[in-house]
Image (cartoon, rainbow, N blue to C red):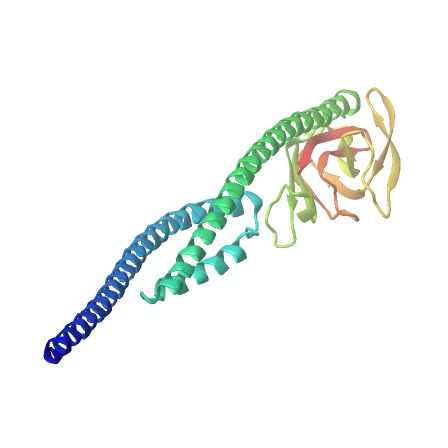
Amino acid sequence: MRNIKNWKTYGIVATVLLLICAGISFGFWRISQNKGSEIDRISVEMQALETEKMSIERQLDSLTVSYNNLRTENEDLKGRESSSAALIAEKDAVIKKIKSQGRRELAALRNQVADLRKIKIEYETVISTLQSENSQLREENNRLAGENNQLRGENSNLNGKVEDLAKQLEEQIRKTQSASFKATSFRVEVERRNDKLTARARKARTIQISFDLAGVPEAYRGTQKLYLAITDDKGHPIASSNPIKTTIQAPTGPVAIIAQQLKQVSLNDTQRLSFTYKPDERLKSGSYVVAIYCESGLLGAASLRLS
């Protein structure tokens, strides 16, 4: 009887021990299952982050090309370095650093992707701003180009009118002041310091006038005074430290002139003569009339345009 009781006790203890072992085994199995699921979840998330990271990097490469093109256009339109250059250079350095980092723990990969997302947004914002600015600059430059073309046209018309005034003055002088004989092959040239011809006022140094006198009437042969007179297109004499005031006896009557240079010559039937004159003051841009007189009137005149 006692043996039977002992066997029952042993059976109960064995059953309890088996239940305890089963519970412990089940617990370990659940822990193992949970850990495996977490590893799988982390692996899936890291793979998704790696894919997104590569996608953003490719998008940033494309955005970099677009930005560089817009920046070049912006600098061409403005004529100076774009203000966004320093900002983008800073972002490019961060991108380069992120690209160089390998696959590490999940937290680091999350931070990399978050940084790339932020940089992508900043890149897109800069590109959008540049596109808008470039559009405005193109419109402004086109407007200014139109205004410049209009001004050039107006200046051309004005220059044409000024030249017409000089031509009219030249023609009037010829008609009212010409002598009984006149110069031919009348030529006016302006030289600068290195002996090259120029039509630019700021470089003009010396005025060269040459002409022929042929078939001089006998009454006018011998010693004659020749005068060089240079006026602007309004008939005002150019500045001279020693202006020569005289009156010539033109066929239409006495004419008072102010000359810049006097040359005494001996006239024959035919001769070639010249004057060389260096203005006391640099001539301004504009039209001028260069005339040569003798005591009995105008020998020759020509208009001169300095730009």
